[in-house]
Length: 182
Image (tube, rainbow, N blue to C red; front, side, top):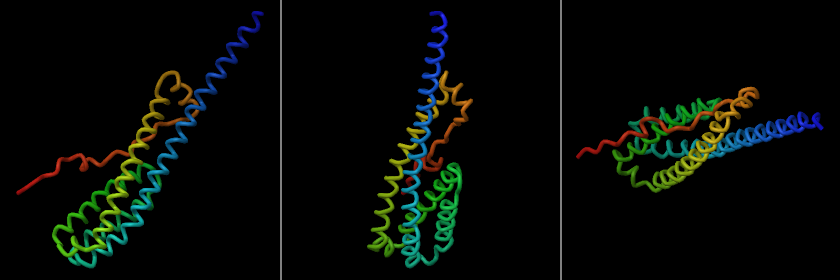
């Protein structure tokens, strides 16, 4: 009878380890799936940018530098390999896109263009979807990071190579209060 106690304890510990491992794997897969959702929306934005640049180019010929910068940043975002590189590149691209829409204020014909308005509305819709996907991704990353950080999960996570994921945070300039001048 006494020999059963260590066997029962061993089985309980083994079941506990399996439970923790499966939970961590599930959360890791959820973070990868959430990033994939963000990535799909970012690709939609990347596909829209050439049309936007061509439309603006027709009206704002003096703004070549700004347009070239947007194209360069788009290409950088597309070619980024790691999640960290993609997040950084996407934040820079977001800032450059804001400059394009600021250009429209200087070109009334561009601002009134149906093509430009359509592209602007489509981009606004994509940006909202990206924002939602980013919030979901960050929530899943938070849950994953919490799960691998709490004791005793942290012991198992460290041994099995589960590492922290980074959040898709907004660029610091997005947090700044816009200046209003009259």
